[in-house]
Image 1 (cartoon, helix red, strand yellow):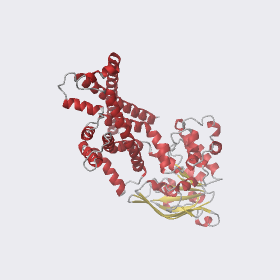
Image 2: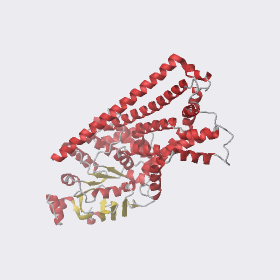
Image 3: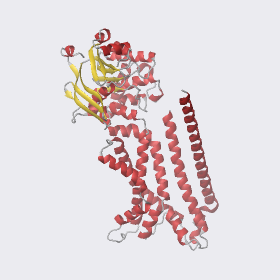
Image 4: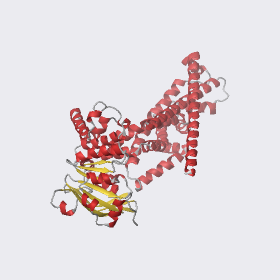
Length: 284
Length: 260
């Protein structure tokens, strides 16, 4: 009894410490996000959007709108490409009998997938995307190939996150729905998924953040394709690697870095908030 | 139902040589039993004796666990239950299952009760309203809940949640009700009220109830099956089993004595 009481005390202390660390982490990331957003808004207020683009008159050239559009373009293509298969794979992983060879293969892929080096995914995308050794003449196709590569890179991670979210929903609800005569997919869609939705939405935001910030694949493919559209990360990377000493390069670099970090932290902060809501939802 | 009596009345459930394996553990070892129409049968036995595994086999819930294997012959009104061509969702609507822990869905009271009907494809609001009211009346909750139909069912007391789960099973018009230790999480007063509900249902449904509560088994059932290690050690009329058990293991179990 004494031992179990001591263990219970340790567990309570451990949980309290974990909650404290989690709280501090959320608070810090929130503060950073708010501070960065405030800084960004302040720059906009003081300098105006044109101010941010002021460097476009500088020798290095700078068009933030164009970069943002390119990043949004990539996200707009890559997100549906990763969301739909991830949902399907998670639904299959949830319902399909575990232990069969197919499921074991899927499970292994999900574990091994995130270990694939980014450069390998980029190379594979180039290999599949480039026909006959030449990049297609439609230059924006480079963006599509980059988006597909990003989707492939994030598919295992997002699938695992969605699967973890749906498995976190009490299994008795699924059992109850099925025992009431619902087909497994109806139970999944009508009972499990709505309860897991905040965590799933958080996972989607985190994936969007990862895609927005991904540089290696985007740089590889778009550089090879010679695509004129340059997403924020690629633009920043080019500035850092190609024109570091150019006069007037500092302002665009700072602005773009600030924007990149703000967007990513905002995505991640949103994800944490949603996941926090899921936890408190479970408690009720 | 005891085989002698079963032959003279219509058999609703027929189980022959039923085996269940949880992975490699053989938890139900070739049991056979018949339950007559509108009869209440109790499955009693120690924890791990295989009662729950039998109920889940009847409802095909073992299908959800790939590590579980079921063999044997189960029929409801002569129709095969375990066959690969069985319409399993329809079968589950015919055989409503109520779990030990109230399996209340994270939905409103109304949506909980109407869940099975919606899953069946019923969307007419009048039909859903009518079925919901009927089912809640059957579990004696309509008067208490008619003004709270759109509240979250999870916020209600556990005994009401359990009765809502029974109402959900009733709403789809089942013929058989399977209760898996339905009062396991309830206090004695709530348990008594639940027994009253089940007692009223006995007239209209064939009921199979697995229970640890011997009083509940004695109060509600017409026939009793005593299970030991996945086998039926003794079965017969409940009064006879409780008053004149023929197997010494049954006698020891009913007296609360351990046997080796």
